[in-house]
Image (cartoon, rainbow, N blue to C red; front, side, top):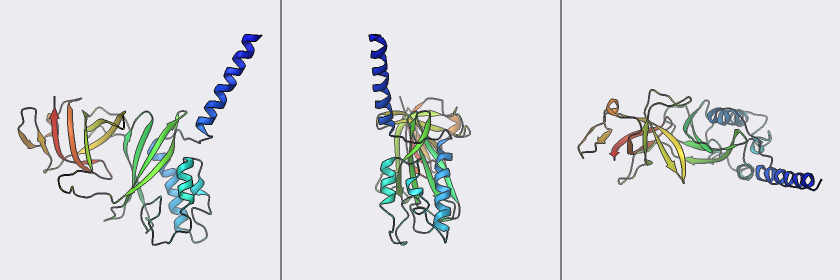
Length: 240
């Protein structure tokens, strides 16, 4: 009996601890990009509506959002229309959105959301966290989107391993860089090469990149610009 009581106490303590950590957070078992669009599409519809808005519709407090993000969105209610929308990262409301996976790890994923309108450069970088077998939206960061490197700096500069054998939603037609960020392994970014993409080989020689000569799991330093679709590569340095 003592053993049974002790087991019940331990189980109860574990339950309280686990539910406290989860804090009732709602998750979705869909792919990260789908989770993001399931939130963004109603937000756009509410912003375009003449009878309601995302706040009146309760979208700022959607269960799929982290409590911190929800509180931040709620605090922006009533801001002037001239200010960028905290979810869309722009003042004008787009008609169509694009959601592009940037990377997906075991515990975290990021999706880049942009307008499909020509010339639109504003973008939202949506970070999702993994919990109980599903995903929830943890944070939204706004940026100006595609831009040229200034003074030798790049919007993407990571060391990792080249990989082409990838699983959906990643496209195996393209090379990808698997890298570590903030101490977490398994981040993945698709790579796109053009006539200005330069590659430095192990012997130090430099030439226009020929991705067909790459070898799976080769170590490399990638420098380029992060865009809606992935990384526009400007320089590759193959490493030992």
